[in-house]
Image 1: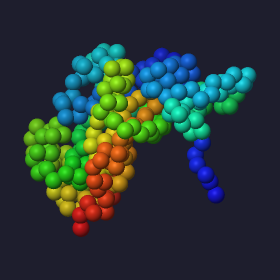
Image 2 (image 1 turned 180 degrees about the vertical axis):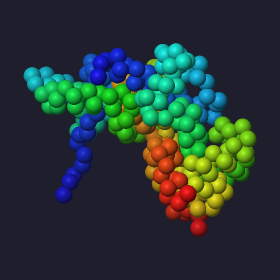
Image 3 (image 1 turned 90 degrees about the vertical axis):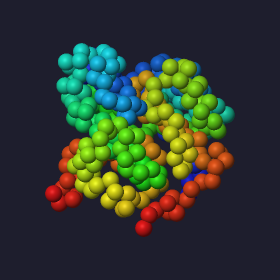
Image 4 (image 1 turned 45 degrees about the vertical axis):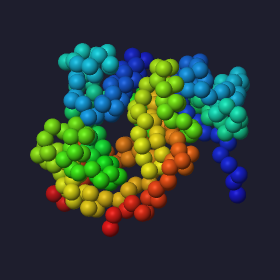
Length: 140
Length: 151
């Protein structure tokens, strides 16, 4: 692997970290492409080639992971949590949540257990997968 | 059987850059910087805590072949090396502001949890470093996780 690829990886990671930090904000491809020093046209494709999914999907999983955290660790109501984590409508939030987690936000809260681990592990491991585990374990 | 952990390791892609970051930016101190001939033995520790060292190791031959080296470097630059280092602080807000002023890249700004408040940063190569002020030090009641489990 050339040093140029390593530098590209590092710049794409910098953009991915920006998505994680600003998860409640709309996805700003223009800004992310600037962080990564790639053209807007190349950003989505390069992100996917580097991390295996689109920036949009990565952000959705980050938002759902934050929602799962808030459903577990806070008493905020589901509508507030929906807007807290960056969704614009309760319908989209519930649909996306159910699509990737397999249960609705309220069902998830009912079953929730606080995970006694640092947040970086919940960020990495509670983030629902793009690779179908939730759907397959849910039998759908 | 054991008496402690004396050393752990992080892969870095440039040891001069690593030394500058871990010492001048992060605020650790060099505990060893030795040219062993076959490798540069570079370790850092929390100031005053020699004996709990972190080896800043450069991946490469002859310890690993060229292709493996490339794979390791790829994992580091993609941020795929996992949880590489966890530090504790007695003032997370001040630490956050100090590191921010030094231009550190954050993966997470201060976030409060039942176990304390933590932040996440990257080293220049892509490694993930976490810094926490635990709830006990914070002076707040430490919530017992089982008490928060919902039936």
